[in-house]
Image 1: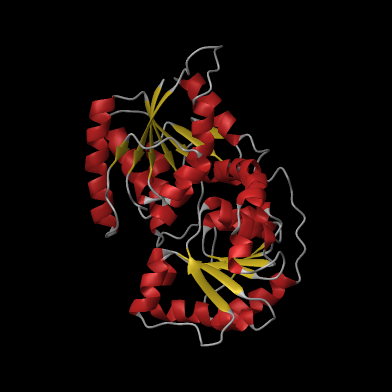
Image 2: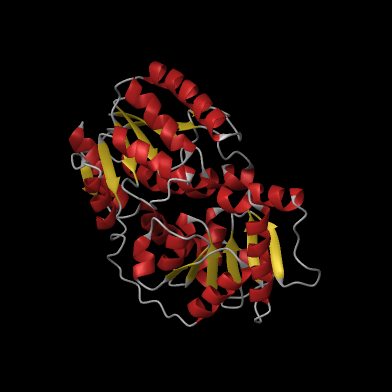
Length: 367
């Protein structure tokens, strides 16, 4: 079976690492792998800390095709990706195209493949925030509606698909990010030096990430978020903020800075092993990232989500994740509430750590 895998953004590298690992295993006996995977990197995330470090740390196969699309408007990026992916598909003639998540790379891969009548398989199908102002929501809805195989991480995702009339080809798999977290957490604890590098110890800091355009492109929202981080840092622990390139650029363009002497520490974006080590040892996590929300849950760390809604509703229902508006007072109120929370992890909420195996078995059986 020949599969073209479309990736381009940091969360997709993590998910693809686990599925690629299973794809090379032959399910039909000894000998050469039964599956041939062609990896296409769109270039949506392209600098070292957002891309190459993940290939190195997670042993992801080097891309067979690097499209080099880079940043730009949604229309510009997606259009370029569709055209370039189409060229790859003409050349490779795969049996199936595999896409992950909800980025522009996801949508471009799904559109290019479906227009060439190549089956599409979508990992993380059925997620819904029900906020159509989010580009990611548009991407995931459209991708689901052109996919032949829909790998849903949770029962909630399956219910969402059924509401939209999608029931064929839907398979509940669990979450591949749980696979990755379980697989790499010991390696991170041994190999990562990030705590020493930053001069912090387990349980002595808060962790925060901000990258969504709804937050970074609105100077008022962004200023409110970082003002809240300063307030939180006055509670005795520093707030460690690995900066997404978009966030750093927006802070500079809008002349937003942390106060001199503040206990908010802005650091460069980090790789996956360093990130899960930071997450596992934080007292509390504040984020607008879907992936970080889940990783906080996997690490048994309370999370504040800088959004009014989330596609990962299970974390909210479990009392582990607190949604908040982005003004300073709302964030600080959520911080006080989350600080009093003790998480009781439900191991079955996102599967058993074998989602990638279920996905590959389903791919093999379907083609």
